[in-house]
Image (cartoon, rainbow, N blue to C red; front, top):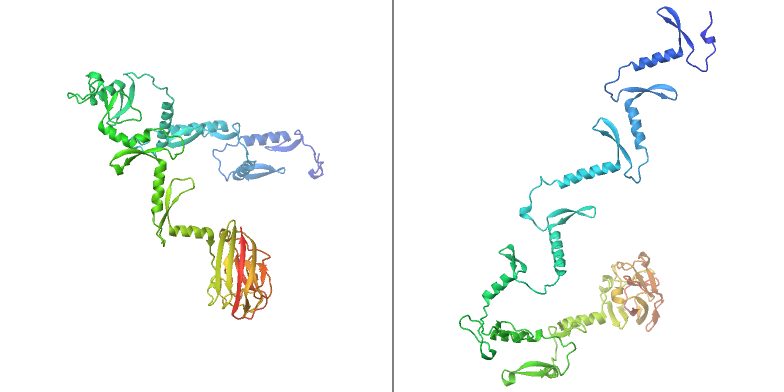
Length: 517
């Protein structure tokens, strides 16, 4: 082996551990195996003292691609945390799922969701059920005070009013379901309140109390005629004195004079209903004032004849005023009469038969302009009529311009169409009563969503604009029908069909007629 260079040696491609390496042991030449070196290194590592505490700046060695490298514990810990958080989320946890925890802060263990849920439930339940440290509220209970209940498996609260209502409702149901008493006994017990204190009272005690108020003597007289006894102020022969007379009397009691008088006002109400409509020959009791105070009977037909005679005798008012009052029935089958003033009647009739519309200020403020409306209801048809006199309005200087008061006045609409007033328009026509003069004679009718269009503004500036009638030049007595109809809440405009003269009209009358349903 003398003079052999290490660089010229053949590399060992597979180290088995038994290979020899030359070493010097205190100056003595020796050899060691690869396994000897490995064992020595492992022993040396194991002999290193264990760390008592670990900080983020401490490092450990890791193999990265086969190369041993140092790494901070913080970096390793962060990698572990990132790995855990990078796991897929549990979409539907169940009781068998497991979480990691430390038992007592020292021992790592696992716990299932079922055990954790039971622990949380028991802890919360113990805290809720332990009410020993709460303030005493018995001295000032109110209906809005709350109590904890479990409805099914859901925790909820109820107010003291809710509990009270439930108790009374249940008590009512319970009492209503009890069997009826067929034979009363003296020891039957009733519930009562005496001076604000709940107590019980027997039927015998009630009878004794009533007997002390109304003493009935046992004296008898010939022929069973009841008489007063001076000793007690009661009636002889065992009969009782009643202070109220019912619908059906009996032979075991005697009514007082006061009872008889009071019963006369309620006797009719105690009787059964006749079960049918009143008839002319039905009889009522009346006080014949013409013959003193004698009570007599009268057929209903006589009462009706008397009422009709009185009504016919009422003088007719030649000139009704707004404050006059009429009597009407609330509905066709109602007996409830209401009063209605002439003013209210006129308002109702006018609202049912006639309605009105309002033109824009760009039309209505013309010096000589006339723009009037009539909306009438005829059966199921609503007819709208708009009479327009162009006198005083200006036609502008361009075709398809809005006609209105000069100086670009805004709001030049003839009126707004609404379903509530005009119905849904299904037909229409325009009649020329007077040939336009001063401005262009080519006048068209348009509709638009806005009511703000000004005079001399192009109708194309509007939204949802549509031409309803394109007649051309107008002459008196000509009529043309609408080819389209204004929709609900649209506004009507007169628009030049040809270039205007930018002059005021001196003549021109149109009648616009619309039919709606």
